[in-house]
Each structure stands twice: as C-alpha cells, then as structure tokens.
Amino acid sequence: MYLLRISSLFLFALLPVAGTMAEQWRATEEEMRLLPPYCEAKIGADRDNTAAQKHWSDVFGAQNWLHLHHYCDGLNFMNRSFKRGGDKNASDFDLRRAVNNFDYVLARASNDFVLLPEIMAQKARALRMLGQKAEAASLNAKVIAMQPDYIPAYIALGDYYKESGDLKKARETYEAGLKQHPGQRSLVRRLKRLDRDEARHTTSSR
Image (tube, rainbow, N blue to C red; front, side, top):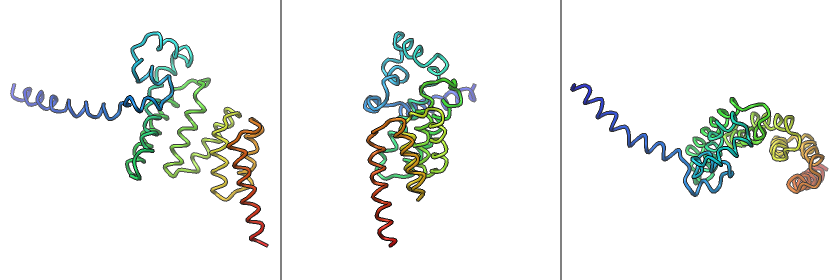
C-alpha cells in the first residue's frame, strides 16, 4: 500500500511537467496565424470541426491527412527558430525538431502527395540553416526532379552553387528555373547579380 501511494504521488507530480511540455509544443494563436490554413484544422481551433476534417482529408488523401500535424508542427518549429534572438543553440534545437517532424511525414506520405515537394524543400531549408548545405542542395535537386516547376528549389540550389563559388552551375540552375517560369523576379534578380559579379571578377583579373 505504501509503495502504491508513493507511485501515485510520483505520477501526480509529473502531470504539471507533462502539461508544460505539451504547452511548449503546441502552437499559440499568434503562431497559428503564420501557418497554412489547413493547419488550423489539424492542430488549431478547427481540429474538432468535422466538415473541415473531411474537406482537407479529401484534398490531401486520408493517409496523408492523418500525419499532417507533424508538418504543421515542423513549420512552427521553423518559425520559432527565427525568433531566438541570436541564441544559436535554441535555434538549432528548433530546427532539428522541425527536421524530425518533416521526416516523420515524408516516411509515411503517399507518392502522389501534393505537398511532398514543399515538405522536402522545407526540410532542405532547415538543413541549410543547420549548416548541412550539401545535403540541403541534394534534397532541392530531388525536388526539382520530382516537380520541375517548383521555383523555390531552383532558387535555393542556385544560391548554394553561387555560395560555393560554382558560378556556372548557379547560372544553369537559375536559367533552368526561368525556363519553367519566364520572368520570375527572384531568378531574374539573381541572374543580374551574377552578371555583375562575373563582370567585376573579369575586370579585377585583367
């Protein structure tokens, strides 16, 4: 009886801690406003709304909708990492939690899941911020192969090549993106900057 009582007291003492951890994990109302609308139905105020659940399940497929809260949580951890005020350890911790949640969804998503390229690109973004730039670049290349018109992957991959000093591959990547979306402003700006950088390099090397 004594041991049972001690065990009960121990479990009771853990309840506030568990509650605190849940609160830390859960997105606040302010954070929810930064997430895609389907996250409201998955982890927000509409999670008990039957009509909303059916709508998004029909849009994404029941299997994908079942696990999508991990993507919403991952996006929220990404957003939190931007607000750490220079605390790299805290920021990296949030980014690693984001990657873990993205991986959870990617491991369970159907091959035709419409958000698959986006989730992969977000994982690549988190990896780049963690300093795993080559792994992020490889993932963005896979995104492009999967969905050739996904412009954010061209931008991220081209930027990687530029930062690595491979201006030729950077140009090829930006131009490949422009073939998919002619006149896309972010890519046009990057090509113009690349032109200026190459012109300065040519001038300085004379």
